[in-house]
Image (cartoon, rainbow, N blue to C red; front, side, top):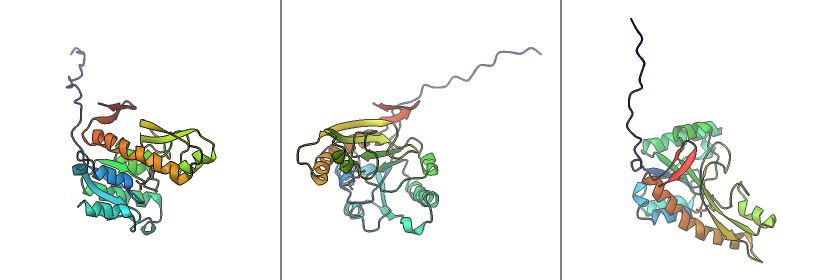
Length: 216
Ligand code: GRF
């Protein structure tokens, strides 16, 4: 019996944009970025749940006021990052969230969490990454004598404040700036940028393909 050449089946062209997705917003603190997302009409209906690691977080009250389901996954109930992250992922999946938006979430997620939401986790950080990663980005920019800092929105990978960058906005440091005054100007930009990015994300127009960010 002769061998005939094997032909791969013809695949349909990849359909883009993807379908709309629902998201979970994770927030540990005051939640002004969450509020900007709630106030964005094209984003709000896609927020399936808001989760905090901190039962006292004002972000939970903001979600309740908007009629959005909330949950607390308290760090203290878990002995380690793996079990915390896996409980968190369970809560999000149960709510049907297909994407995850970090908005001032102060816990580092385990790699196994990212595997459950592959290339579907976004973060906002108050510096022009890769400059000034970490929890004290604004203070570090000021102390480091930076003339310009800003905001970065990026997809999250396994390193802290790292991953494919979606967009950055610069903010000038002014003479006499304090951490608070500089952070306040950075937050003005955050509240403009994050709703724009997340609107594209929930409507399937922002995604990673072959390691590159696409924003249609
Ligand atoms: C923001 O500055 C954000 O960039 C950083 O944490 C802060 C959260 O602020 N990741 P808020 O709780 O949204 O007001």
